[in-house]
Image (cartoon, rainbow, N blue to C red; front, side, top):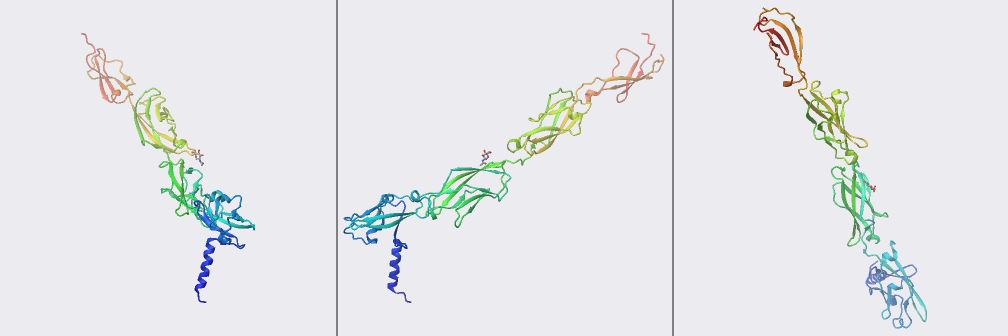
Length: 415
Ligand SMILES: *[C@@H]1O[C@H](CO)[C@@H](O)[C@H](O)[C@H]1NC(C)=O
């Protein structure tokens, strides 16, 4: 069938009527106006659409009678045109309903006639997405695995349809991405997804911005601050400032003498980073038992006897352990050099002695053996032996600390 000009005209008329006011099954007239339209904006021509004679509508008292919706509209009695009288807020009238339709009635008298029609209030993007609060805090363990999801608050947009929340964005950051669920009937929501493992010791607080965007043209957006509080896990062991602590200590130092202070640190938070020091002495070594360590400060002090002569160096281990629920520990070594002081007197012992010596005994005749000992070390232990008084004898060093007593002159001296 050829498309005639007349056919096109009919179609055009049909659509132009349909676009200006929809015709429902019952033939009711429906006008449309956008919310927030300025007073005076034309909504539709009532006189024309209801076939009223312009000449007598004023005389017949043409007026809108609907109690509640009358305030928004005005009739021009010269033209029969319906105008916006008062600003209309769609959100105030219809809240979140996708369709916002105001039923209206107009009348004329003599004869009385009632005309029913509707005005559809169309949404405009006059509301931005809003979050309930401007800031939210998430506590996330530093042990969380990449891929873990964390729920985020949703934004609310008073507008409907295309003008409601359509997407979410996240500020650029190293650790998180956004998983946005949308499409179909469901409302749009967003989840935070961990992409890269966290480390509280590097960054305890991560500040993000969550942005909700609506589908209006132009779109509007709302922002919320998301603070990620990275929760500590006891994932660090204590670390000593040195692996070997060396110190010198005079022997016989009294109890309480400070020897050396051990220092370890642990970057974990709270109890996970608090350190307790202890001496390790699994072998019940008496030399180690002469020392004690302050569990809090790490200061090692003398507790018992420190005797160079018993041991000239003491070695032991110190443990530093944090106070975490599952504590972590580390060990270091302490090497103490005990410094000798001259606390021993030389001991002289005569190991053998001849009781009688002939007066003509020749010089260098051996009459006795003497042993000298000194427990001190080095110079403190070196002994020199001297004879006091006058006697016809002298001491001779024979070997190490062994001396001999020999005749040095005539026994019958008569001077
Ligand atoms: C996050 O942890 C803090 C303590 O560090 C606590 O006061 C707060 O209630 C926690 N917040 C949530 C949402 O669990």
